[in-house]
Amino acid sequence: MYNIIKEVLLGTPLWVWILLFILIKRGIAISQERPINLSKMFVVPFIFMLWGFEKMITQFSHLDYCLLSYFIFIFPGTLIGYLLYKKYPIFFKQESIIIRKKCYLPLIIILINFLVKYLLNVTLGISPSFYTDISFNIIYSAISGLSIGLFFGGILYTNYVQKELNKPILF
Image (cartoon, rainbow, N blue to C red):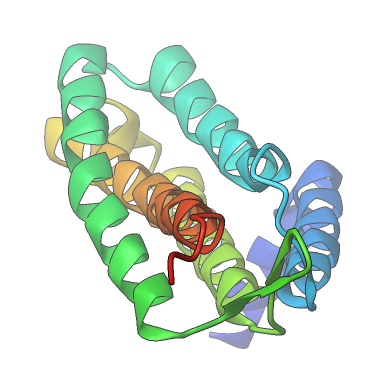
């Protein structure tokens, strides 16, 4: 077992470890107390979207099913992400700026996404026959869509809170 794990870790391309470093750095940064910047919130999901689409478009045999599965599963992922962010009251207004309190939920979501995507790709490396297996193609795409949805749910909730906190107070 140890040898298999060692082989997988040593066989992982350098760019994957660089990406993990960048994602951890970004995850820690966005988990700290800071003003909301909605446009920057799209950086990490964009990276994961590129990673998922690259695999589906260039290597999977059932692209039509992959895309359908991907886009269908974005919706439940968005709902889950929205509800996760809603559970934690992590925003406040300071003067005219909306601030997100220190919260490690974004970092946790980033790390879970990376781990799941990494394990799916390791599975493909161990069993290349999965590139043509329709079930695996659909499962991979569904998980990718679900994980992107988690990010979109957080962005959607953040946008909602920002609008609510910017509403004028009527006496």
